[in-house]
Image (cartoon, rainbow over all chains, first blue to last red; front, side):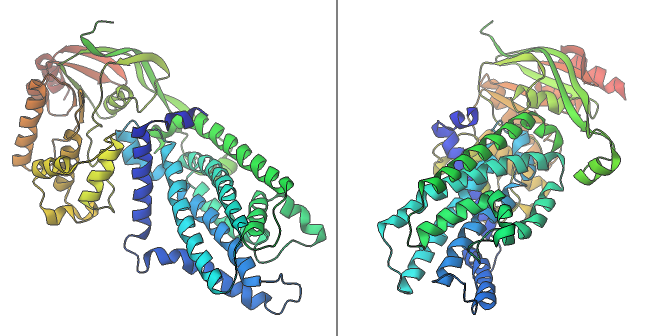
Length: 256
Length: 242
């Protein structure tokens, strides 16, 4: 937890804020519709899912809401890991001239993507309200869920970005296996059928999507059992990612 | 420790992992059955003391470890062995285009870098003085840095770096770019900083600059410290290398 302790001072908070702000600016710079790209991709996927599953008698009720809540969480995960994997390599100039912890780069990528997720969620809630969905205070449970999901993503980011320093194809490999992971995660459907269920059980993202969807659109409160899984997975991933990162960080400068 | 000594480098040893020839990706790792890295010594047993207010020049051939020594002193690279004690604050290392984000505008870079240097509040005075020193117009500072000429990049980087109030200034071969007017201005500024009693670490391939700016100098070769002396002596030694 030594990296976390370093954040406890105003200078470092300013630094992380400045880096996160840079990420947000860079992401939408020179783009036609800027922030709305964040909606465009989920909307396209939503459209595809509706076309495929609209006549399926087993489709969950409120199918649009069901898919959208899963998609929003998925795209947070997909964007944040996709951006962060190159965060150390891409910051070579800064890392080589300033004594600033390398840890700040994957962290600020996670923070700027969290900011995007919050904006998307606000818009999502307005749209759903417009569709006639009335929310109960239970929806606030999405906040701890997002927090846990962000910890999980940060752990994975630490792992990916540090390995990517030494093997530059890690980013490419990760972006290649993401679509497979997407379809193995129950976003357009509730569960994989019987004999494939173990694949789903091995997929850490499944647990976050499940709790997120429960809070956002299902009439049930996520069980303690589900929460416990999310906590174990996110803390475990974070510790593993930080371990790898700390083992490799002293060699970053020579390799970027 | 002598309170007069601002930087104390004791028996510092730095090594890098070097890619084994031909292993750059996981594919290579799997298909070539080679260890991906070997260790290469970059700095070997370096000891240097720098007194407060002193300017130390560092010369040596390409690849002799000059930049690595600067980065190690600045805390960017952790030494494998040895100890570095620093009694002051650093301005960021001034290297070509260091840390400038090419997609961001000049102004955005200024506020990003000032924040990263640890300025909690950026007031308009700081930005104004950077703008003034760099002699870049409003129009230029609103353009993305990728559209700058190399001289303009150097002006901006130098100006931002100097805007920081710190005890130690590290300059890594930046005076080579920029037109004569700006070079002269930078020299003036460096002498001014020196006159304020600040410490300067200066890497250059121009012996005349080293002799002019520095009191003392060291020469590195293949990671070893081979000469130390006054800046004139070392500048002369360096000239004889070639």
